Image 1 (cartoon, helix red, strand yellow):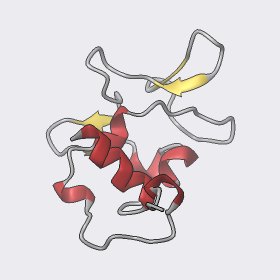
Image 2 (cartoon, one colour):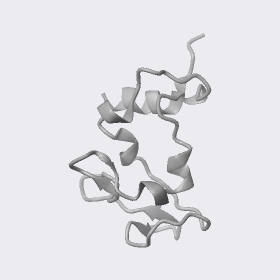
Image 3 (cartoon, helix red, strand yellow):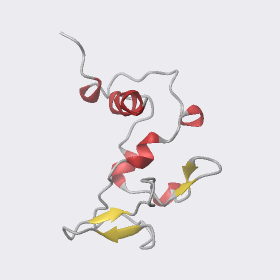
Length: 99
């Protein structure tokens, strides 16, 4: 039975690095929890009343610095983003889906 990478976040691929990625995780819907310290500019209520990270018209998170392809609010990023493990199963699956 094939391994579902989304369920395999314990196995980290050491060859995967944010520095050579197209920041595909920055295209995911990110719900901001009340305990998150995200500045209110990048976080907006959506149509269902949840606070989510705002996205630009082309689908990228507004906190993404397009020149460096890194998070401009990294120290204040939501807990959801903090749990996205570089090289983990979900990271690898999202990268594969994007290709």
